[in-house]
Image 1 (cartoon, rainbow, N blue to C red):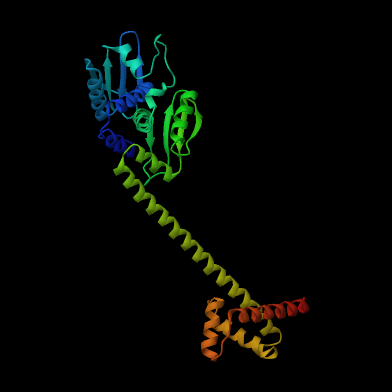
Image 2: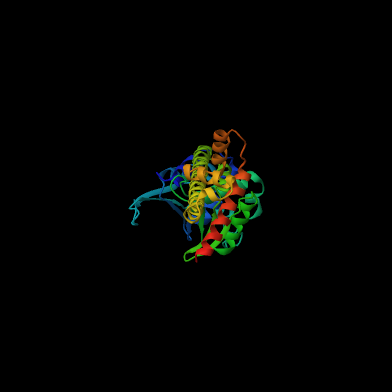
Length: 311
């Protein structure tokens, strides 16, 4: 079962008021309803959603409902569940704000459908059931989307989402418009709006795990880079020491520089901090990292002078 289906299965188990169910039907029918002079037909590939819609329609309007099941001849070869309502057709469509009093289609619902926060959330729930999907955070990039058929309606849904600070965006597709959310925190917030709390818990657990894993990887990469930098610096310092040794010998330079050179050759893989501690311990006197760095810089300058003379 996909993560999207798990979320949809969870949210249809939540209880709604009649007004919330009206808002939910308005959103779902707006996306998935076919209407002609005789009937309203809606479809879904999810048997649980079919039962859910059947129950809501029956409770709100007490009408006869015909349900048929047929094979959905797409690449998934899934079943298609079709709900047909013939009784009170126009009353239902007016009630859920899909047509006006003259019988013309309404692209964006009237204000009473979403007049308070709970109705807005119910409408978004219906929109997600009809045309929404969300990637499993464990296997994919963070992504939640709605595939919608109209630019004005896409703007309406995006504005509704952004009332809850979800940072939704719209992109034009060949078959319509996609309203999407990319940020993990915002997707989690939307799942809370749907009251899909088990989904939120799963999503947050995976998100925290992935973030901790990314932090660990960055730290490991940083540590590896530091090790490589330390080794390369030490190799360069040893190269300078060898130039001096071959040209004039380490006994013929300042005693303090010769001392550092011998310790660097003895401990080629140590960082400056580690070499400072080693020298301080073995010599019985404090050799600071700053002092050590200064002496190694003097060795470099001496090596460069001798190299220039030999050119």
